[in-house]
Figure 1 (tube, rainbow, N blue to C red):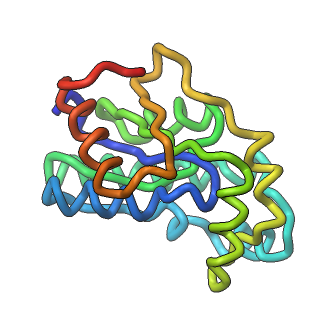
Figure 2: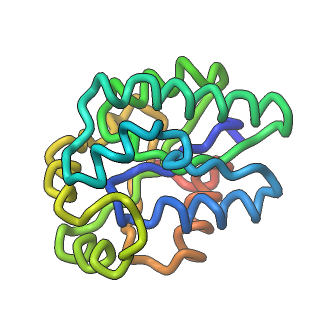
Length: 173
């Protein structure tokens, strides 16, 4: 494995948690759900349909990154689900993680994402915030150690493609 920290990223509803948990089970390592690191004020803001600002995200990204770094130091490898929508957020995560990290972007069209969000009624992130997330998303640049995968593929196929890339058996598309 070329990097001990793996972050599955993308907008809400793309399948980060599903793929992240599947990768972690396959690798026998911890899975960290980035949503669990939001403070109460951020969750309340999202529940109210208000997008988070960079200032809201900054301490959250530090908490997520520090938890990933701690898990890697403890277990050798860790997988996390975290939106990581902008390059500066990914840079902040890398700094907080403190070890090499790779990012797997799950990409999908707006209609599919909206369908998924509308079928996920118990999550605090309302479907009304999808457009703000799509507007915020900055696709990883070639120098970011990232791969983009079609979120509509089967979770097992996504896992296998991500693992091949993480092991250096597949080039970044």
